[in-house]
Length: 240
Image (cartoon, rainbow, N blue to C red; front, side, top):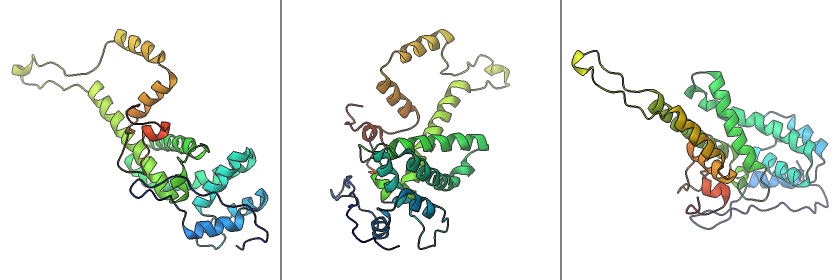
């Protein structure tokens, strides 16, 4: 790819900073070079490049390049370009998620997990008013896998809760243990209805935080690349 003459459209820098050093995130040099080449391409030219699936090819679009172009198309409200770019990015996302497949007992469970990861990614990628997707332009593979690990931990948390609720300790066969009681955290149907009604009356943002906590999201984390609830809402952990 070569830069076109008269390229006057500058690439937008990343806004997110590293916590340890305060340095701005930076794209890889090869990504910057590729963006310099394609930034003025019209959509049809970009779509043609998407047909190339050979990662070793000179004209293969990097994941990070697609993220940049996708967010700019979103900013312009160019729905056709957004849809076309995301279809290719989504194909690559599912390839990255394959490493998690062995953790699931059925394809349906894996599909549900993948869709949850995809929805979390969409929220970040399409939020053009924040820097929540900046790391996706630095290392998209790690960006996806890190978020997938958060969702996976959420799955484990839910499974543990379900086991605590629905699997009481079984009494032994020994007659001397006949008086042992089942241990369970199950609550009555009446209490469930009261809780459900109360939860439905919560403000939407508080309900959303509760769901994120149940899904295993941390309020804050020392790992700057890990999605957290406070980062998601751009507020302090105290507020959460």
